[in-house]
Structures are given as structure tokens and as C-alpha cells.
Amino acid sequence: MGSRLVVAGGGPAGMMAGLLFARAGVETLVVEKHADFLRDFRGDTVHPSTIELFDELGLAEALLTREHDVVTDVSALVGGKRYRVADLTHLPVRHKFMMMMPQWHFLDFVRDAASRWPAFALRMESEVVGLTETGGRVDGVRLAGGETISANLVIAADGRGSILREAAGLPRKDLGAPIDVFWFRVPKPRTPHNETMGRFAPGTVIAMIDRGDYWQCAFVFAKGGADRIRAEGLDAFRTRVALAEPGIAGNLDAIASWDDVKLLSVSLDRLIRWHRPGLLAIGDAAHAMSPVGGVGINLAIQDAVAAANILAGPMAQGAPVDGLLGKVQARRMLPVRVIQALQRAVHAGVLGPTLDATAQMEAPFALRMLGRCPRLQRIPARILGLGVRREHVRSPVANV
Image (cartoon, rainbow, N blue to C red; front, side, top):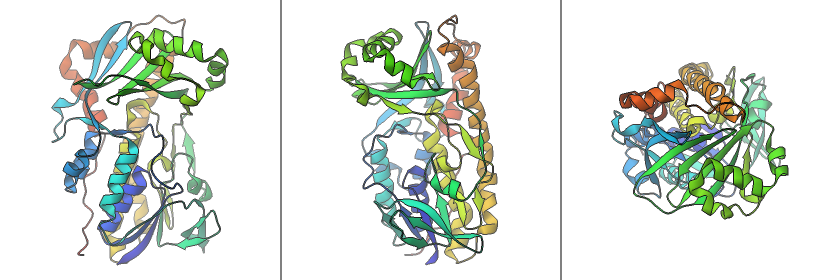
């Protein structure tokens, strides 16, 4: 069995890394602070690029048996007119849709797949709070109770508030995010066709994700405005939502209190350097993404695949990999830069003007062009569904 890997964080990036490294024969321990995965996630979109990865692992059909809904197109409603933004049905992959799957089901699935490999272990209710070092090289992690766990390599996959990236002193660039988001749910009847929609009205933007029997709604507002909106009262909030989307007005009693409205303080940043000897950051720990496009989970999984492609083979043979860590960053930095640039463009060119209640409500030129020429919808579909420089599974498989 190869060198020991410790992965801090059992989210999508951490669990996918756990699966792929253990599959290659690397002794792998994923350390997760919660007791289970049953938490209120909002990143529940599994994009075609991710489904394709599971196809390459021979796991896609099993994944598709888990509870999910299917979305094939994304649209926007501006000034009462609907514009289709992305049509996924023309993508050059087998599964031409997004899966809307509760993230706890997704993580349970990855855990079950990883657990078939003898090299994999998962330790729950164990919070990583720091690193251990020898001679300036990271050689393990420290848990909340004081226990230490040694490792030949530590992967920091502990999210946008990563403790380990701070502990390691990895430099970070804050790109600025002018928005925050309130998440809430509104019940709905099931329909034969599911879609993801954006509602744009003067001063209000609401993204609505069809989750079968409810809408997962993201109410977007200018950064720092949460306290002001709460101070206006819950009735005023429901009224703003109803004015933007009258179709759900009759079900807004489901928002019974502010406890039903969860705040996401949006960050948009990336590490300048993702690694130091003995440590590699991936996923949100390396690059916090805006919720625009719902691509964060898929970028994180692509990071894990790239890390395994580059590092798992040498680690399985017991070789040192510090000199290879920069290759993971070099491989993944381009897609991160491109997607974050697109998200910033949406922040500035779409969300910002719409959130100005005094501005005239008009569909952006690009949106009008997408409506006039349906073939153009394949461009955002490809970016949304497949991303930039998507990864394929090339890490080795251990003989067991």
C-alpha cells in the first residue's frame, strides 16, 4: 500500500479525492468534522462533466438510481419575458442534463463507492484545527481534541473558510463579491419538466432551482444588506419575492420565520499558491466561487480528479510528491480564472444593474441574442455543463 494521505474535509472535493486515491492503492483517510452528511447544502447541482467522470469510473448508472431530478435547460425571466439561456441537450456527452441531487445523497454515494477499496477510511466527528510540521514541511494534522494524525501528504478540502489554508499561510487574492444570498424553499407540485430559472425584476433577483416538489430559491441582494432586509420584516420580504415571481406567491407561507431563510455570505477569491511541502489545497479551500452558475461543486470535483491523476500513481509507489504539487495548481488555475472572470462579469453586468431599483429593467444584449438565435444557447450550455479544461479519470487502479 502506498504513502499515507490525509484529506481534511468530507465535502465533494474531499470525498472524490478519497475515492480516487484509495482506488489507486494509496492509504487514504478522510477526516470530517460532522457526524453525517445530512445537512442543509445548497450546492446540489451535479453537472454533466461530473456525471461523465462517474461514467468513466463505471459508477454513473448506480449514481442515477439515487434520488434526483433532471434539468436540461436554464432560462431567465426579465420584464415578464422568458429567455432560454442554456440548452444542455446538444452536449457531446452521454448524459445531457444536470442532476439536482441532495448533496447528502451524493456524498453518501461517493462514500459507499470509496469504501469498497481497502485503502479507504473515513473518520467522522473529527474536526481538523491545525497542521503539524517538521523542518518546515507539513507532516500531519491536529484535531480539536489535541490528537495528531501523521501523513505523507495532507489535502486541504475544508471549504471556503478553510482553517488549513490559513494555518499554512497560503497567500490569497480576494476578487470581491458585491452580493450576498438568502436561500429558502417554496413547495410546488411535481411537473414532467424541470428547469432552473432566474427571475429579474427592478431591485430584485431570484434564482429558482426546480427540486421536484419544491423550489430552492436564492434571493440575491447587495452585499451587507441582510440586516436591513430582516429589519423590514418577513411580510415585506415575502411581498418582494411575490412581486418578482407571482407564480409562487400562494406558497410563501412556507417561509414561517427568518429561521427558514439561510444567509450565504458570498465570497469570490483564490489562492495565489495552492501548496507548500506536504500540503495541497483543492476545491473551495483553493478558490471560493460565487453561486452564479452553480458550478462550485463541479470545479471542486475536477480539482480532486486532477490531483489524483498527477499524484496518486507516484504516491501508490511510495515516491515523494512535493515537486508535483505545483502541477495540480498549474492544471486547474486556468478553469478557475475563466469561471471566476465570467462570474464577475455577471455580477457587474447583470446582477448589479438589476439590483438598482431605480434602473430601467431591460434584458441584456447577450440575453436577447440568445433568445433570437437558439443555437447560441449551446455556448453557455457547454460552459455550464462541461466547464473549461474538464478532467478525465486517468489515475491508476490498484490490484486488490
